[in-house]
Image (cartoon, rainbow, N blue to C red; front, side, top):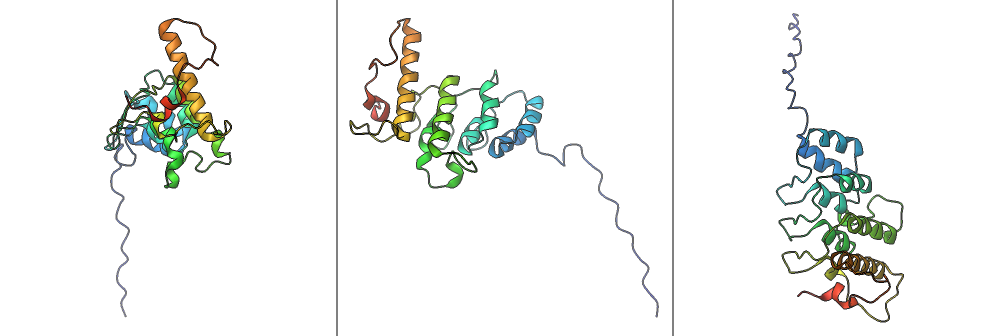
Length: 205
């Protein structure tokens, strides 16, 4: 009985320097979705535009907010070239729209606290606060004519000031008041009722 000659394995295909890895733009978005700081920093070293958007119009900042990637979010907000108010193509939402509204989303990946062992209220206020502190514009409207604050339920005199909704509403009011003061040069106490609370939740003018 004769045995067939053994066959050696074929040689591996030649390596392409770019074939075995994602592009810098793909790395940027992947880092934002997975809160991978190392991948983010690697991508930023190769990129000219940190505001790259995918086919849905979402940037790394959008995805960092959607997936609760707080470490990557911090890096992005500190980047000199970051554009805070780019609108995506689907709903015309800015990252701030998503940050305020996503607590109502059913999909787990759209909740700020995904994968986090922290309270929902803490995560929400932290991310919204970070965007506002960085200078996100809460007056930008999406395709439905909604500002970020319009995602909140209507204000009520009986609302619990310690609820998530009211904490976020308070942050939006304070940031808007500070913007108005800075633009007018006036000095007012932050407790002054500069903005009607209902304007944050329902004003679409």
